[in-house]
Image (cartoon, rainbow, N blue to C red; front, side, top):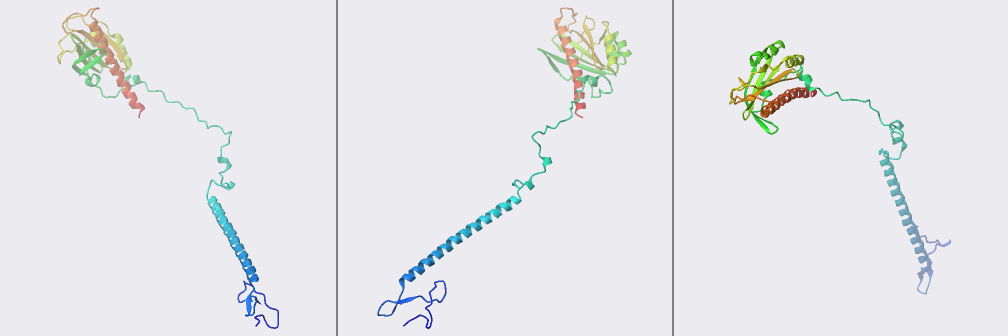
Length: 294
């Protein structure tokens, strides 16, 4: 029995065509047997085609993945200002050149510091509160190795009433408006400081220069300080700073006369005059600082 087409050539088997007939050959007395050589050749051909298909498919997949990655990179760079696209660079005018010079600024200078003395040179600027307690605030005043104890204080607008000798006339002639007194003691030495207040520095300077040895501030007793310098010889001095003239009367509370050898009296007088000067200057410094910070 033959399975070939009758009346024409026998069709060739194609493994990729459906319903195609496999070739058969006669191989024995029991009928038709397969052509094993043809089958093997067909199987080899089919395997080669499949390998090519798988290899080709892998290449296509790799190319597709590479293309997708490249597109992602391009897309990311499209929104990145740091990309290499020249259109994303800032305008050339905003990029400083290597030869650009540093910016220059106009020279400036700080205003000169305020002079503290200007604030105590006249009544117009010297407006801070003033009292004997604020000018002489320490009950115990250390000056170097010495410590002085504060006694009584007074504050009056009748300047002439606090002075003796030729000083009342000098204070009145220069329009003294106020006079503050304080007494400090150390052992048997007492010193009274009198601070005369004027409207201007010129008036205070004249009062100082016009005073003499025959005029002095009255010694102030009280608050534990016995009377002194009523009949005994005492040390008197006059100084001024700004619109303030300050006078000192120093002596022994025992009634002894002051002589050139009375070093404790001279030392106490110097200490209290120095302290008074510092207090007046500090008054000017405080007002100058306040004005500078406004």
